[in-house]
Image (cartoon, rainbow, N blue to C red; front, side):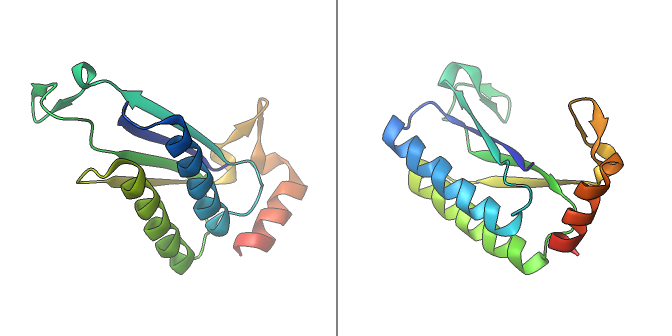
Length: 132
C-alpha cells in the first residue's frame, strides 16, 4: 500500500509513461513511506471508450488519479504530494481538469493474503511509528 490508478487517454509514449510512474512513485513514497509497496496502475482509455458529459468520444479522457492509502499521513505531506502528482501528470498528458481522489483506509479495512492488517501487531506498531 499505497495502490493507485491513473485513468488517462492512450496517447503517451512508453518513455513518457516510465518517467511518469517514477515521478508518481516518488511523490507517493514521500507522503506514504511505509510500507515500501507502492503499486500504480495506468489505465489507458481510447477515445471511443470515454464519455464526458454524455458524449462518447467527444474528447480525450481527462486524467483522474485514485489512491488507496493508509490513514495518518501528515496533511502538509499530502499537499506536497498532490502538487508533485499534478505536475507529473500535467507534464505527461497536458490535459485540463485533472482530478485526484484520496481514499484513506484503516488497517482493519485492508487484508493482505487473506488476513487483516490490523491483526499483524508488528505492522500496527510500524505504521503508528511512521504516521503517528
